[in-house]
Amino acid sequence: MSTANSLAAQVHGEPAGFGEWRNGWPVVLAGLFGFILLAVGSLSMGAFMAPVEAAHGWTRSEYSLGLSVYATVGVICSPLVGWLVSRLGVRRVAFAGSLLTGLTFALFATATASVAYWLFLWLLFGLANQLIMTTVWSTAVAGSFTFNRGTAFSVIMVGSGLAALIAPVAANYLIDQYDWRVAYAALGCGAGGLVALVCWFALASSDSATVRSASRKGSVPGIRKAFLSATFVRIALLSFISYGLLMVLSLHLIPVLTAASMNRDTAIVVAGSYGLPMIIGKLIGGAALDRFSGRLVLTICLSLLLISYALLALPVLTIDVAMLAVILFGLAFGGIAPGLPYLASRYFELSHFSRIFGTLNGFYSLATATCPLLASWVFDERGSYHAFLIGAIPVIVVAMGLAVSLGRYPDPSQPPSPESRP
Image (cartoon, rainbow, N blue to C red; front, side, top):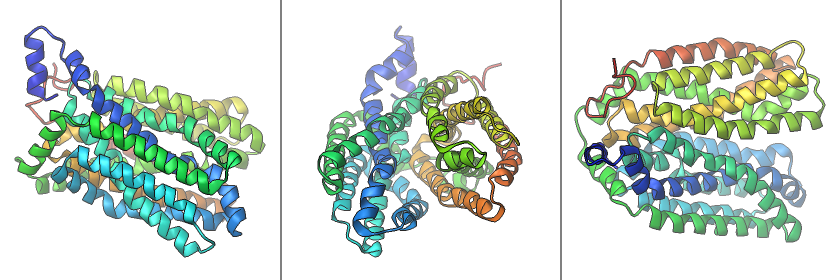
């Protein structure tokens, strides 16, 4: 729902927030399913790892090399996807992207002993995935919600948490009952087809068409001016730092705990406990974004991340301290995830949102490709994660400074926000 429609609803006695949810819930449903599909590939990797390696005689590095190809595709293609959404609209891109993501995931069933072919399959999968990345769903939500935009962002992102519960279990079941090739085909075709169907009907709204029309026309200041602004640079750096450090702990959390002399079984249990706090953090963070300054919410979430890193860097890491660090990490991750697209939707005109956030999503991919690798290098050189954990603390402080320096939301056409009130 547009701002004008929301304000009109208030005039006629209907709460604007209620009207947004009444009209915008199909968009949120599509985004929720979209995030589930987006996470299926990465979250099911663990289930497929052993059978695929055994079938082809691969090393762990050869199997995992596809992720590097996947991340590189994101760095290059994310800005192009934002432009594509602005030209074709959310519905068409999401529908095609869901089908292609499902089909390319199913193609992993055709993998041979050739590592080159394996990387080619990851290239196809990475290209298809770009069409269902955060940019697509965030554009749909930004065009449908104003007063409850933060909450709507957070709800669709809960899909990744649900995928963490569904994807590994489904993959393991299919592998055990049939084999890994059938599992790839069934998961890909089933999930891709279902999400494509949901998108086709749920995104057939005037809100998505409004965003498409506005994006084609453009507005003042233009997209070039937005990209050259100090605000864009700050948010881009904030995105790179925050997401990079989040991805480091997401991928290295178990090794970080075992490197601190915790046995592997305990480390797996402790590390796995961040899923529920992450979902809670998303819901609380999204609701907070609709009620308080986005700068304040992001700064608080970054402070939780800082405490988490500081606790993990302690010389002696007990189970209680480790559990606290993991819970704080989950809450921080949950709050930061909807916070970054929310800031982009508030500091820049919605007519430019898909292209701006598409470019910002490229910084996410760059962070995924580089920061975990840097943490691995530090471990290889030092035999410990301690230097990286300590070094991350001042970097998080810099990110907090970037968030604080953003200033008030600039768009006067938006309804009064917490930052514009006396």
